[in-house]
Amino acid sequence: MNMIHRLLLLFAALCALATPARAKDELVLAMTQMPGTWNPIISSMLAKSLISNMTSRPVTAYDASWKLVCLVCTELPTIENGKARVIDLPDGKKGMELDVELRDMRWGDGVPVSAKDVAFTLEVGKHPLSGVASSEGYKRIIKLDVKDDRRFTMTIDRVTFDYNSIGLQLLPAHVEKPIFDANPAEYRNKTAYDTQSTNPALAFGPYRLVEIVPGSRVALEPNQTWTGEKPHFKRIVIKIIENTAALEANLLSGSVDYVLGELGLSLDQAIAFEKRHGTKYNVVYKPALIWEHIDVNLDNKLLADRRVRQAMLLAIDRKAISEKLFDGKQPIAHGGISDLDPMFSPTARQYSYDPVAARKLLDEAGFATIRNNVRQNAAGDRLWIELGTTAGNRVRELVAQVIQSQLRQVGIDVRLKAEPPRIFFEAMNRRTYGGLGMYAWVQRPEGVPRSSLHSEEIPSAKNGWSGQNYPGYANPQMDKALDAAERELDFTKRRALFAEIQRLAADDLPSLPLFFRVDPFVIPKALKGVTPTGTLNSSTLWIEQWRWETQ
Image (tube, rainbow, N blue to C red; front, side):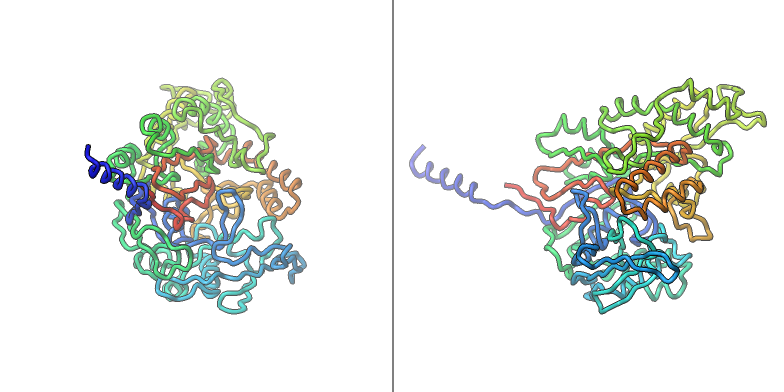
């Protein structure tokens, strides 16, 4: 090798060392579900929030440390800083006033995000026919005193420990209000979020929707009016791949850069994937406040006796399922409150696998006769139940099959029904599901489970299908404990009320607890800034921090 050749090689090596990290203009993501609507306050679906978190923001959210932070406001109102106050209401009860100032943010057409949007969002949320997921939070705000475009005072009708958690998802009044005013009952079907989904005026986050191919993909591009940190990607494509096995194939082939950890690869896939390809990815197993469970339709007369529900849970070997399908990484849930949550109580009843006890309870509930391996009662009603879940999630479907087999061992005939997520959740919300519905709730730290357990949260035509109490559970003791828990400011006393909530839920079992999910984040080493949260405020709320760095 001559001297010139050596110098050229040295120069090339030095250039390589000096080469800055190369950017990537387009990021291709994937997840397993397509949202049923793009309106941020109609229906509850994780798939929608993962994308809408890129195009808008709630006023406040819990970060990866489970700390409450301002996203649309400038400062959290607290009693300590004087921006939150306990006041006397005209009816003699106590309420609260919160002083809020909005950040300088703009919708995609340049119109400022203002108190007018707050007022309109509250108007929609309170209307009995608007179709919002849950109207309770909106109704509690009994007064909005607007100071100017960005400053207002909210009056809340009660004192609660989480008074400054303001999860409002704002709607653009200048776009949506004319549609809503024309016919509030039809608003959920006429909203511009679904009829003009790529309208820039619907976004005030770092990105906006530019393309939607139903059931296939969604594309986003930077929102030019975004006032926060500039996003790093010029285009984000989100592929909808409902089959989790196909997700992995797309990731390995390179047609997908990253599968969203909150709604992508199953835990068993990620464990196997890490063993084969772990050198190219950072695999994070994030314990999450995500409760995989089975809702029980209490209108089904076969399930009305809680002894039947208790027997079903006793007959499901959740520990064996976790060990065989999830390598033991997915902890068994004893109720809707995770043991990672400060409000968890170990004193509520816990159900271990006990098929003998299950059979005894079924006998006591009147299903003592067995014909063709299926129990029936004195009236001849066979104990057969439909178990519905979302199609395409391979592990969820496997869990359903195992549950079907285990319940058959105690004389319960289970018919499986897997449906596309949009259809499945519509049946859950309208309470038309046959008997059992398996899915997951994503929760926030110390969250009072009012929307899923309070009798006022049972969705019906009368309340515009608002509420998430899909089982139709109504227990005055539970209502009392839920109401008291959110009003109790003392931590120790509040824990006692949470313990009562968990005790009642464990005895009545309107939902059968299965697992608390551990979400696997299989992150390519070049993708930086993705921080799993483990709560309902997903990692995509900080999408502007995501970047691609290769050498």
